[in-house]
Length: 92
Image 1 (spheres, helix red, strand yellow):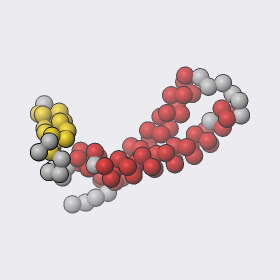
Image 2 (cartoon, helix red, strand yellow):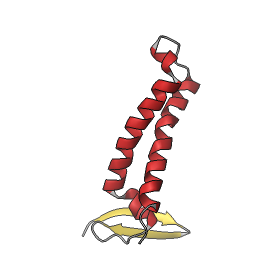
Image 3 (cartoon, one colour):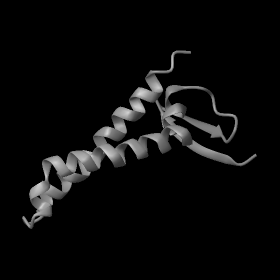
């Protein structure tokens, strides 16, 4: 069986095989369904927040490096929140 992922955590290298991953918080974060949902949430929420917070850029204001970083981070935060909610919301 092919090895899908190697994770180094707490000084131990863990090899996770595709289809046989242990059910841990980390594997839930990396699960395709979790990543897919978090990306969709991030795209929608991040775009709305960028339109609210950086509307002046659309009207012709110059785009600086700082503003570009802020706009990128606006997508990271909803991704992290969505992933956290999906992983920690599951009580097994």
